[in-house]
Length: 348
Ligand code: NAI
Ligand code: MG
Image 1 (cartoon, helix red, strand yellow):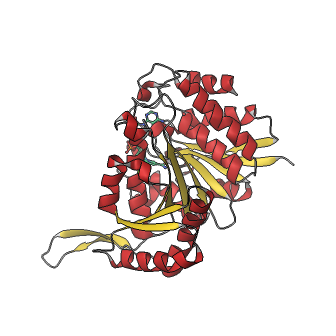
Image 2 (cartoon, protein in one colour):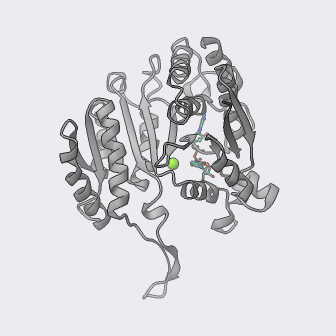
Image 3 (cartoon, helix red, strand yellow):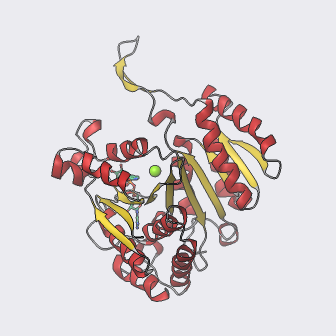
């Protein structure tokens, strides 16, 4: 049966890299149909809303969502709910995609593109499991006047036990399928949210006797990621810490243009997107690295369509293209977005 993929390309380099990911999906020969809808600044321009109801309806109806990026400096002055970025938080909440999987592994040949020493970078093979539906991003927020009479901004950080349990379970399960190590990252020394997080995760360890559980404070985790990233297998953490640590991890493997992600709901339905944003500084120039989007498409096949073999083929093709010297500007090369995707397609 034909599987429907919603293509929400968005802003900036979003459409450029998403088009290449669609080309790669088409090259798998699988029975796939693609339907596009506007989102972000593109959605605002066309309908006055960053997340038009028709776009959300398509995302719900589709078997999986391929997402580009949103964000456009043209709209930075708009109120928050109308800004392009409101679409990404809105769609994550509406689709209840609470589990964000962000794998990071060093591709052979990129040892010198990493911000780390080659022997340190070479050991990176980790998965960040980031909670995506809670934390300070979704808590009560606003502006008010402080007791001293100053304008004050606030964002409430909170997690409940059930939220922590369900994301921790994703982390434990992932560790079980990988090398059996789970590191939970929090800031329990100063935050009550994190104390609860640590209590819940620790209590679950008994259900996973085959997984070795450790805890790190987020500041130490940031340091360890650079000092010795090879020590990590699976990292499970909250929304804010996961956002920051995964961008950091991207530079450890060479470029943010290489890192894909899957955002899954409780039934395995998902949205797939590169971890990078709309990169307005290079948008429209054909310079963006499409690999993060292409690898996101591979995750889509694996997690939402059960097509693990096709996913393997895409991932192997990206690895071979890079090993063979294919490089966009972010990796010190000269290939255009399309030429980089062509190199991947040749390897398929
Ligand atoms: P960004 O990820 O868009 O760019 C950061 C830096 O990495 C830039 O120098 C950019 O040129 C480079 N870069 C990013 N992707 C690349 C690729 N595929 N190939 C080569 N270089 C790449 O983050 P930034 O600049 O903080 O945000 C830009 C806009 O994107 C903002 O409006 C922000 O809100 C939005 N954003 C959207 C996200 C999403 O849609 N999920 C995620 C992060 C940011
Ligand atoms: Mg981010």
